[in-house]
Image (cartoon, rainbow, N blue to C red; front, side, top):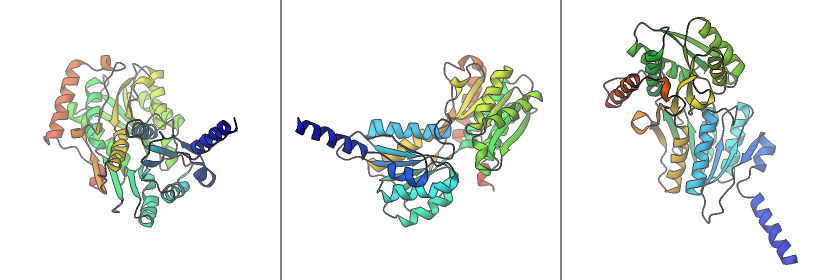
Length: 346
């Protein structure tokens, strides 16, 4: 009996030390553990989420889904941290590096400066960052051609709008989000040159990405001005845009993850930005010994961006419109249509 109790206690102790994040919780705020599978040789991955954390139904949730896929299919041993403010980012990145993680992933451009400081201090640790370029040999910069996906959903909006007026609600007023705006506007104008695009941003600080009340207010204002489709690129702030579309019986367009399910019949489509694919792929590269620093670009040609079509929105987009959008997609991939990359011209 004593031997059985000892074995149980030993198992519990082993579990408490596997995949947990107790050390970073004390020093850097909220954190969580995704657990481990107990494999003999596991890839340890530390994921530092952007401010706002899990539950945004968008950017952070997509990154977490990629982490869970890596756990399920690659046997990765993941942990994740949720900074409550930007000042905590560096603490999480440094702690995961000190713990000897095989890979530390920074979710979002807001961590660029923190990672640029931490990465050179740990040359034997591999890092990745989403939506920013950090020029260090041990950093993989995972960037997306958001302008291409935004062009496609802009074309859908232009083909579906009945008023000839559509909207865009961005989160933080920064070049990255202008990249969505410009691509969307070009897509609208490509199929309907006379259409008008209303534009609004939620703010100039990180809080602009997690203020759904503000998002709803901005969307209602655009609906009042005659818009009948609004594309949001605003993190959880965009959830308020979707609420407004449902309330008014009009359309929103989701972003990053497939948000069609959030208001069936009122989310025209979602601009897919496959953060989950990028997180999974860079973890797979580590597992296979293929990690390389530098830029890893995800565009239409590898379905790194795109638009969502499923049971929730299939009947909202006419078949002829879908055929037109698919033809546009092929032309972008072939280089026949060149979409402006706002961040490249700054």
